[in-house]
Image (cartoon, rainbow, N blue to C red; front, side):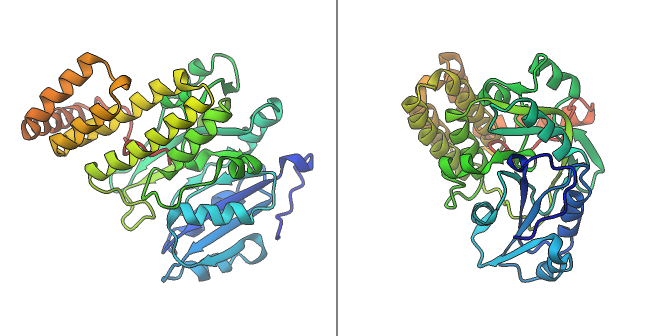
Length: 344
């Protein structure tokens, strides 16, 4: 293992490995690595997993020499690349960063301070900025003031699911998790085409609900990059994947007597995915099947409204797109949005 010299490290229990999955990202991976090297609290190890790249990704990574631990593997996808990095990590804590995104300089410093002050925590996250390629829009995902208010004077949330429904659960680029917890939770599910991060966060949160949170942005999430590791499919597929995640999480939540906390989060996520589906006038049968499968997660009023909307899918989609255009024209939307079910 190649460790980065870290004079700031105070004890071995707070060593951090940074896992960066990379696929055909030669033009951008240096930005991600440089942002880790520029941290005010130095990482102990940087593990970059080349997920079968065919461009110059390998040569760019190798140019960093001993500063980076380079691993090549045949293409397994984002989840598989992250899992390889976790297994190769040699430190107590694992932090994640996607190769097309970047950290702000104080990410590790601020998050490790939270973890040191609260030794009962097994994971932490932080606010981040969304950057929309091509339009030069860069905004915090949530306002700093809102984050402080939600934290109510603490460094952490008592329950991840509360943070999630209030958009204060960070994303994959801000997650720092104890390596032993990642293994105990079961790592990322490689068969999922997307939302594999949400799936893992739910599994962790059901058993270890408390999570640290830094309210100021600590990372930059670059949206709409062509050819990225994450490629969102049509809404019907999104519904299928999110439904699978919810069903599995419900089973686990019941085993751990956590349904009272998980149910509002499950309903919140399903509503977001259904709303996205209505924009794309997904088959009414697909949406109504979701209502039936998760009947107890929705109110009667909501189910009635959605059934009405799915009766006129094209008209509903037209109205929603019209409202969206009006919101954009009047600059009523405060932040750049991301696809539902994706905490990356």
